[in-house]
Amino acid sequence: MNNELRLRDKAVNWHPYTQMKTAEHIIPIVSAKGVYLTDSDGKSYIDAVSSWWVTLHGHSHPYIAQKVSEQLSTLEQVIFAGFTHKPAIELSERLLALLPNNQQKVFYTDNGSTAIEVGLKMCIQYWFNKKQKRSKVLAFKNAYHGDTFGAMSVSGRGIWTDPFGAMLFEVIFIDVPTKENFEANKRIIDQHADDIACFVYEPLVQGAAGMLMHESECLSELMTYCRSKNVLMIQDEIFVGFGRTGKLFAADHLTEKPDVMCFSKGLTGGTMPLGLTTCTNEIYDAFYSEEKDKALFHGHSFTASPLACTAAVASLDLLLRPETQDDIARIVAQHKAFADKLQLHEKVKCVRQTGTILALEWKTGNTTSYFDDIHDRLYAYFLNKGILLRPLGNIIYLLPPYCVTNEELNHIYTTIFQALDEV
Ligand SMILES: *Cc1c(COP(=O)(O)O)cnc(C)c1O
Image 1: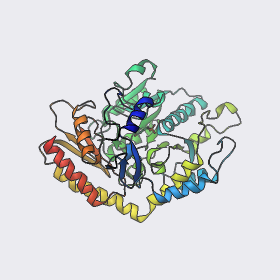
Image 2: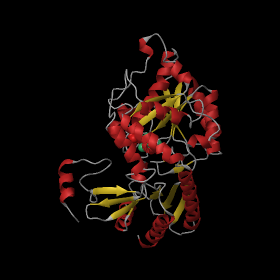
Image 3: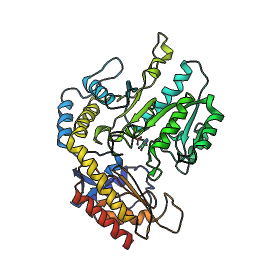
């Protein structure tokens, strides 16, 4: 393999979630188009994980590229305090029109973790501004909401967070809702009800936990209970938003509406970093005041980047086209047929699907773990076959860009069956 870029990279770059000493397969990518990534040797890979769950319409999409390029030579950046611009106005208008109708205002950031930070600050300061003592946060066990300190605090604790344990704020963790545990969760909420500022959750799919899934009816029931206790709800749609669940948003599967929603990842079609947090007028109004100290004191240098907002508007144009909606339905159906076959394989412990997200658990002697060494073997196996799949421990998941063809899907499915027999 062409080693030049690799060696230069190794000399200067520190990669995310990577033990640099043992990392072997850091691959220089020189171009990407549609579902394919091409490395510096000219080998191509199907990006079956949408490059960490962000790419919706395929890489280097010409329509998004054109819109961003026009914007780049018109207005590339402007401070978002005291100034505004059309891409942010248009994106907010277009997005709010698609969300539950209680979502009325948009606060911009530049990634998912900070969208969560803002959601937490909105809810905690909401109670502060109202002079009510509510400061605890409720979250699901095994949650993942990002890597900044607030986002880490409301995420499941483990080896990732251990070095920082003492610095994370206290959170009340509950099990994801099932048909059986509603009463138990109710009791926990009751115990703390007057102290809980907000409940933050990944709706329907806990991505980083290993694509764990729960039923929309059970989540709706829990949300309704939170509503009855005046617990504000922060719905983290950073991963599941923009069609991943088969509908535009996870919210479209639920009967109860959240107070706050967080978006990033697929927001720009995966082309540029952008995050945003939406909220109700009820929350916004708790900050809207003659008193300066009631404002939300939060902002990032690149808040509402005009380039990223332009990419997001272009991505929405593509997402709402009937062709894209048909593609999403097609992927859901293809996954379903594959899942039915996969279920019967002796090495498969279980298969789960929510919309375009498919996950299978590989039977190993050990209990399921992120550090299962089968991860390394599977990762290398698929890369060798020209497919980027990035198992979470012994869990293989598939969430391709929506432009993936049936032939490409079948190639991935066949290779997974081969891996089951060969690895
Ligand atoms: C990825 C992710 C985040 C964090 O977003 P970043 O942009 O990586 O900071 C938060 N919540 C969920 C559900 C995610 O999948």
